[in-house]
Image 1 (cartoon, helix red, strand yellow):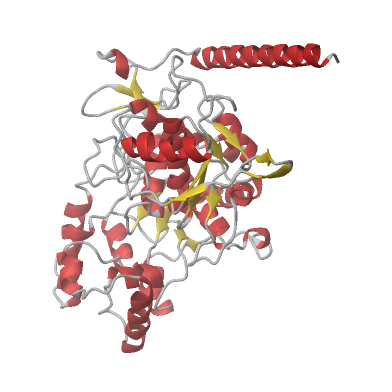
Image 2: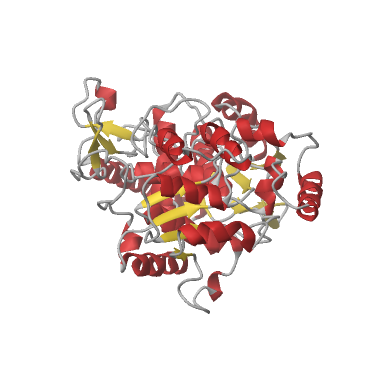
Length: 492
């Protein structure tokens, strides 16, 4: 199945300019940056001279983490857990996925991801085990108890090298919970940043049943040509969080306010102020107006990734009138998704279909948001075309339309929308997330003046394999010598 081999670059029929031509090489598809004119390759490979992962005897202890949040928050937390284990020279226990309060989903890591692939891909970086081992004390065997710590939000590397490491060495195992946003995104060490990319884009592969479902949907969509995917954030939790409720009926506003009161901080939010700073999610109709203004017509095939839309059909009706060729993850037939009826699994299917779509458009972005992580994944696999609406710049246009001043709106939308990079390489500027844009850390240059920016040699994996095998041979020899000495001493 082609999808299991990883995303492949395709020519895309879109109003956005292409970033360059594929050249292909071991590190991935390369693209010539239209400004800097340097050949960029995705390249998260580990430096061959870097330290090998610790053996059981060399490890400082066992690291457990609880990854809370939805699919994307959990995914970035897993990446951070691997990096944290690397920083502390710890053995990582397979990360735990929190039972999500919104999805009501108790899927664990083994239910969502290919565990053997995860461990094998990271074997040069960290030692990973399925659980904390048992210890024997006073003639009894019991599991090593991990010391529980709540890490500070966006904790710096120094916190892990001091506070966390001290507890790890003292107790032999620590349990970091919760673990969403518990490691700073901006790290000065490029090797650690590349490790994040190895985890996120190579080691974390969904289970075969999820990949198969995704592949079936993509193949069906591709059978009729190119398609666009849209992540439509217009669900109850998002709208309540944003506090943009004025467009809803009194009954709907009551539901949103109640949900906000129960789940979020008590703040007074003014609709117009929120709208003008770009904090309100786009409505389905506004999304339709944007892509129509950009030149897409009613023959455009669209895959819609979303949860249950708040407000029902009345909000989708204008969008469907503009773009009737809509599909979602139920398109492959009843019963097909039965084994994947959990919220996180359906979200994973949406993630893969959006990743492989010709064009992707998020309607709302934020830290660890589904769309943010997906944009980073698409950028990594070839700067794939992504349409990112500037909600702040678009707000005055849509507010004028709400008040009946709609003259020239399409041209105004075009002026905003075509002033964007469409997924091309660009320097990351705060508050843009590393998981949204891993350039330049996870890319290298074919012809770089600085040696550190150059792509590694083609045989880097062979070098790592040789080093890893040599270390295993030395460990095996040491174990044999210990066993032999023990036998001589006991007279066996």
